[in-house]
Image 1 (tube, one colour):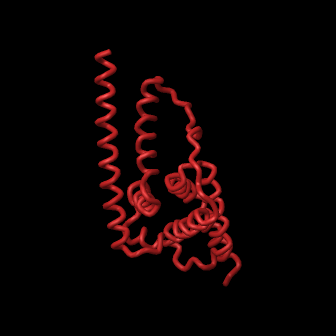
Image 2 (cartoon, helix red, strand yellow; image 1 turned 135 degrees about the vertical axis):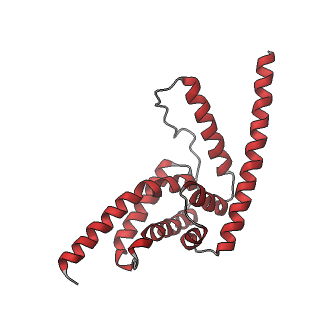
Image 3 (cartoon, helix red, strand yellow; image 1 turned 135 degrees about the horizontal axis):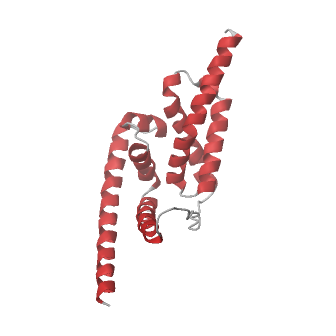
Length: 182
């Protein structure tokens, strides 16, 4: 292969890899709920992607290839240790009022906590489809599972999320009513 053409491919590969970092981090964070673990997971994914770049056959499939690498890295991480939750990872730097920030953060925390209660398989599928917009077939390829499994996990995850969020929302409305009376 022409060295100049190889250089251009490497430059294009590195550019696509750099542009994928934010999406990789979002998904890694949704899986682990820990920014330091998500950083490590993305770093390991990118290192493996660079190491095995010659194995990528279709540059249009690079994103699903990267997410597949990350899913394997995540499985390796889970095998090695039990993840721990650190509730002090939230940054509080907003230009809005404390009340607005509290309400927004309360919703984010509620969704993150509810999502963290899902089984890992459902959490993976839900984050890839709902947060990142991957198709069912892409998720099946990334996680190395059948498309039917993707659909059933997604259905169960959506149902559990809806039930839990509705229950928690009703409980909060009851508490607000009690506060108004007092």
